[in-house]
Image (cartoon, rainbow, N blue to C red):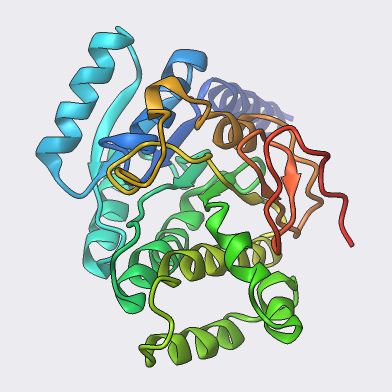
Length: 297
C-alpha cells in the first residue's frame, strides 16, 4: 500500500508539473518581417507562451528580441540561432533546445516561417522553402509534446496559383494526400535540372511545402500539422511588387495563431491549407479572404 500511495503522489506531482509547464513555440526566420510579427503577437496575446525566436544571425535575433521586449515588457522570448538550409545548424539548434530544458518534449509548437522570395534559382529556393521545413520538422518534431503538439508551415497563395497552371496529372501530385516524398522529390529534381521554368521557383516551393505538410500530418497523426498563407505582405521578399501592408499593420498573424492555438477542423493524420483569414482553402486555386470556405472535392 505504501508503494501504491508513493506512486500516486509521484503521479500527481508529475501531473501538476505538466499542467504548469509553459507552452514553448519555435518560430524560424523571425528576426524580422512576418516571423517577427508572429512572435510579437504570440507573446502579446498569449503571455504564458514562451517563444524561441529563430534567426540565422545571433546578433539580429537578439536585436529583434530586445525590440519585442521594449514593445511587450516581460515577454517570454529568447533567440535561437538556426539556419534551416543547413543540416549542422539545425542539429546544433536542436542540441541547444535540449540543453535549455530538462524535458523529453519541451516544445508545444513549431512555426516554419523562414523562407526566401523571388529571383533565386529553383534549387536555392527549394533548399530553404521546402527542404528547410522538412529539415526542421525531422529534427524538432521529436521534441514536441506528443499529445498536443502543433506545426504551422507558412506557405503562400503562390502555391495554389502555381498548381492552377499545371496539367490535371501534375495537379493531382500537388494536391493528393497520397503523394509520397519520393514522388515529390522526383518531380522537384526534374524542375531543378531545367532552365525552362524561370519565375516559378517560389510558387513551386510553396506548393511543395503544402505537399510536405500532408506527408508530415500522415506520419504524425497525433499532432496538428497544417499550412497557411499569411497574406500578401510588404517584406524584403515582396518589396517593389505591389504589396502595401507591413507585417506590423496587417493580419499576417491571424492564420498562424489560429493553427497554433485555435481549433483547426483537420482530422487526425490530415493536413489542411488555410488562407490568411484562417479559413480552409484549396491547394489548386486561389481563395481570397472573405470568400466561402473550401469544403473539399
